[in-house]
Image 1: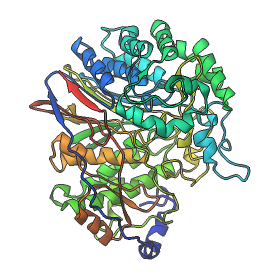
Image 2: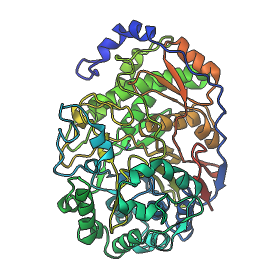
Image 3: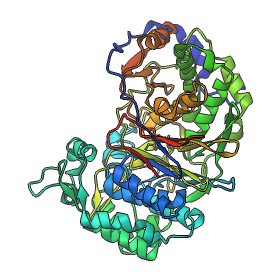
Length: 576
Ligand code: GLY
């Protein structure tokens, strides 16, 4: 490992190993109930697997009318902004990976940007320390939303041309205008997030009852302002969101709440096509999201490291141990190198090369865990699984879409822009507010991911398409903050190395390590012998839920097989 590319703290890891080992805590019991198996759904012509059933069906109907996977993604994406308000959105941002039937791979970056008035000190307190109140709970945290620009760009360039944007948005507009019955998942989330939403009358107006309590399961959610905003976009295109009355209402709402976003920030927003991250794994081709997401680089880096082991013939416990060692190294690189590619230079070819992986592999001891340097210095990983949402789509023509988008926290910052009906994000917490101060997911970052005007904060979203013989084989991705990349890794390896069917690959309990804190998180329900092996290797193991939701599709000779992740209620795999 050359010094130039060595993560700064790497040299101290082995020296600190004894200290790390001395501090190991016993693992909690792994006797909790196993995750319910996912239901596999087979379809011949096309399939959508999404976190919310109404929106998933809208996507399938679009496919049935002759639409392609991008048309269905746009219809589903706008519908979820109405039917899944905790993460579906037009007030946040995300990433879309497209494989086109002709062989082309596309990635669309519609990540939020920081307003022009944000700088490296924006999220610090008077003492110069990172201030989570500012970066997570205040209107300062709101990034310029990218979803409308991203979905419109996808449709304009890669839709089938059989539909107008207005036609694809019509179901979303009707659902917002006429309302729909609130399902259990959103209803269950509302009381938890109510203190946050309650801070603003505009949010209570949308999600509350007349008595000021949150809507409950079975209540009707009607969003007339959102319907008008969507109708304006349908009529005049995405610029109706970024300029004019809607943009003015968003900027006014953010500023009234103490934020700094201006109408100019909205006017200057653009979704960007990026060069996909590519890798190979045991003959399969990986296509995933480049920076400002860390997902693709970290995924390919870990797969490259793991390719050097015969995972299929390792005992499951040893397989997962080797995986956690790869995770530590990839997340350390994430913290050190990655940020907005328009601002920082990232050594992507090196980080995703087989040679670099071989160097990392050489540092892995198959019998003894490598410790990250500062035990628990990064803080705990939060249980934040459902604040982002992923859907996978495949069509009859050979096109596929993997799309992950988010408001960051569940219901974002909790502010509905008055008059526009748009729930706004708190995405700017994904910056490193200060070098080596953890964000809400316990992730560390450095200068590369410092806040700055117009910058895109680093993400973990990992929408991914695995190709076999040039055709979509596996379409996957997940919510879950820092858990996302490792969830995707394990779906991919469960299918390719273990030969699992997609339902089993999605359901199997997972492990997670993100370099710091120096803890292996083992998912509730994981077998005791796996925990014991990880402990025997010297890892601190914590058994706990790992809330992710890897809604995935596998293309097989028997048809498309979809699996909605059973960890989260409400998801649906549907096809025709
Ligand atoms: N907001 C979580 C992520 O983008 O990774």
